[in-house]
Length: 110
Image (tube, rainbow, N blue to C red; front, side, top):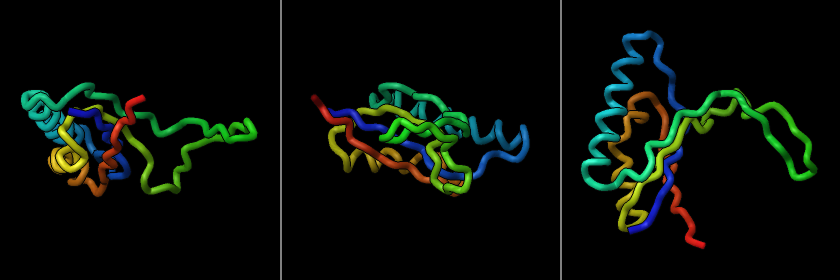
């Protein structure tokens, strides 16, 4: 088994408290299923929309940039036998219902 990072990108935020509650129920159910099947290592956290970008020359600017359609909105650490299985497991993610996508990245062992 190996570790993989799910980066949640894009998607529209809920427009009402009721919609937000429904979305959270879907996320909770999906993550519970991953945990019950032994794939959840760390639920991760959602990320704020604001931040800073530090460049090679050490300049610091505001970011991430709001015009970007694929801002990272959160992350989760999962365990799977290989990248194919990790990608397959991500297909249940509720972010797809809101126009977002999941970037699945293997964690390099060092």
